[in-house]
Structure formats: structure tokens, C-alpha cells
Length: 323
Image (cartoon, rainbow, N blue to C red; front, side, top):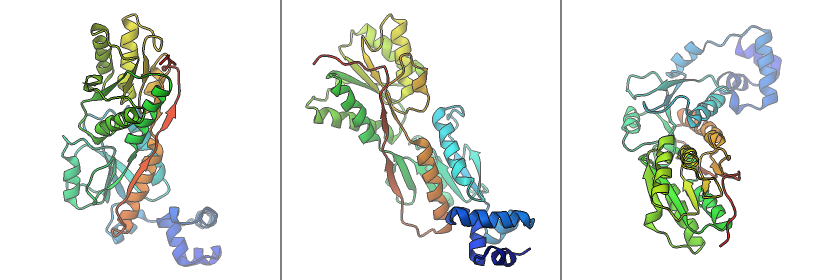
């Protein structure tokens, strides 16, 4: 059977059959099903290798994972599922890489984030291949989609203020990524909107780990901190804080309210469950993948800049206090 034979049987054009085979996401579902059924019935086998050779493409998307990225990290797991879901609608497959080389066999790169201490993104740009980034950088040659960190952080801090909290500490981490400053900016904007003066003394920095959060708990205890609520820019640190405070004899949220950011699974490890902002990682990674595939097909596509809003998840770690 040829593509022409399949097209005649399906009552569609040869171009439509070709699209079903090569770019099925561009064809309506009922048409795809009709063509797929005829392809299966007639034993049509698409030679992907021959197609890629003719189009001078590899049919592979490389997913960059830094060497310090935990493969069991819930963020990265959801990210991979989103990418895989988008690629499953195409003839593309993905490969995980933890370094960037010009000799890599791929058509483009997807980055799960950007740490300014890592040169991988710059190395990828030097290859000339298209790049899609979960994050935001000024470079217009890279398609960027991210969580709206400023507005999402502002949302959770405003929630704390609605619960009567006016002395709110914020815990940053040592990651050299834009999201750290963006979530701090959201915190500042929420305070300003609520008429509360920003104080440097309420900003603390620790490693983005459970241990980092436990370190904050020890500091809180030793310095008799007057904060009635603490906002952590990641759930991982917040969970460590709750564990550390409970180990020191405190009760959450009776002694201090706690809020985090991510909502990817770590918040469920806390008892009480953690109030947080849920990042739409799955949706963002799907959109990133589709943007990259479109740029591979059409290099003249305008640069993509898009933000997804996080959703506030109200749980048990925040209590109402009297103003």
C-alpha cells in the first residue's frame, strides 16, 4: 500500500495522510483515527529512519538534566511525564543528557530550568539547535515558558495576611536561578499592597533541602523569632522546617504558620499538610515541547514568552491570628 492508496480509501488528501504519519497532532482526531485504522488494516509500516534521513533530522529531543538533579525529584518526574505525553503524539522520542556536545544526535533541547552557575544552556546555544526552557531569560533565541513566580508568591503571602499575619518571614535558597528573586519580589509586592513595610531581617537564605529547613527551625528557636508565619519559596525547605520545629517541641500551625511553593508532592509529607502554591509543571512541560517541535518545523516562528499562574492550595499549616 502507498500513501496515495490510503488517501483514496480514507477520502482525504495525500497531504493529510502524510500529516497523520509525521505530524499527527496537526490533524483532527476523527480523521487521524480513520487513517490509522486503514494503515493498520493494510499493514502499512512507516520507515521512521528513512524519513529522518530524508529530512536530515534525528527524530530525537534531548532533555537536559544537570548532574545534581535528582531523578526522583517530583518536579523533574512531572516535567518528564509532560514532555513524554506531548512527544507521544508525534514520531519523536527523547533522550536524557547531563552535558551538551555539538556531536549529540538530536534536533533540539528542552531545559527543565536554568542555573546561572551552569554553562549547559550557553553550550546548547552554540550548537545552533532550537532550545525551549522552563524558566525565563532575556535571550530571544530561547523559547521560555514558566510559572508566574511573582504573582504566585504574591498570592500565597496575601493569603497569610488575610489570615491576620503581619510579621511574615521569607526563606530563600542558594540556587542561582531567577525564580528565587521572582518569588522574593512577589513577597515584597504583597507586603506593599497590604501596607506592611519590608524588612531585610525577615529574609533568610539556606540550602534547598530538608536539612536547610531544619536549620531555619533551629535559628527560629535560638533567636526567639517573632514571626507568626514563614513563607518558604520551596516545599522541600518548608517540610524540613515543620519537622525541625516539631522536634524542638513546637506545634504547627499553633506556634507559627507555614506556607510553601511547588505543590508537587513534598507538601504531602508534612503533618499537618502544607499550604502551598501548585506549579502547573505538567502543563508547562507539554507546552514547551510543542513549542520546540513547532520551531524545529518552522525556524521563523516568533519567540515564545508565556507565564502560567500557580494555584493556591489551602491546607492545614496556616492558622487565623488576631491582628
